[in-house]
Length: 79
Length: 222
Image 1: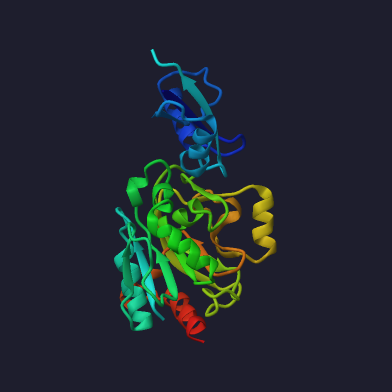
Image 2: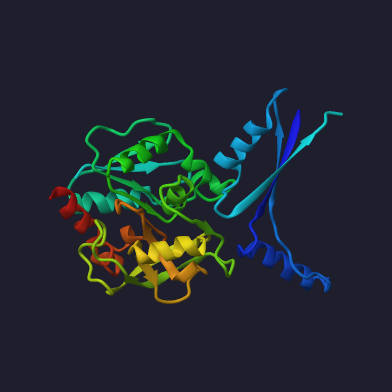
């Protein structure tokens, strides 16, 4: 079973990395970009039966720093 | 004073801190590897040094904060043992939950490596007893992720409780309220981005950092 964890900065937290990407895009001539926020995608390959609670626990204990980041879990059906 | 310096893969200021501690205390600190699960007996001061533990993977300090030795450091801090986290060590202590807030990428995105003037905001702590309140000192900084951030309520609480130990006089990295170093609520844990261990002898150009360790030694020995 696979799951994806999307980690994003909370609203209002300054994102210097997103700002740099934004500037670089403008430098390449992409003028229609209003804002850029960068985050992380973590893919987990999990034992069958791993519960949502356990994945959330992983997020809170390590994958995200909940002082500054939000996380969202997406379970993927095996092909 | 028997001190311990925690060493992670990627620590690079562990030796500087050990040299500073040995000069000031007259005793070689125990160098404790991150995979150890216990501190040596009788440790009365713990230093978490600067560097790039675990290559800053995931977030600066995130992996180190979950290494086996940190459980022992957290327990020791809870018993009142003084703990200092310098630079990457500050990042590790916030990630470990020993200090509030987080250290993010510098607002100007660039690595900052220079001498910075600081103001000692609280001269009553274990770590700052040998400074005067409001005194201006200079420590070097060398970091990419030193931008201290916390929510407004936390910042207000830190200010109100005198837990901002050091503040930058100039803009350095985008830190909220120019915070350079903070204390935990019981005052025995200090995290700061600047490096006091790099200004302890005349050959360093300045000795402003020496009084931090001397003050600590006097307090711990008393």
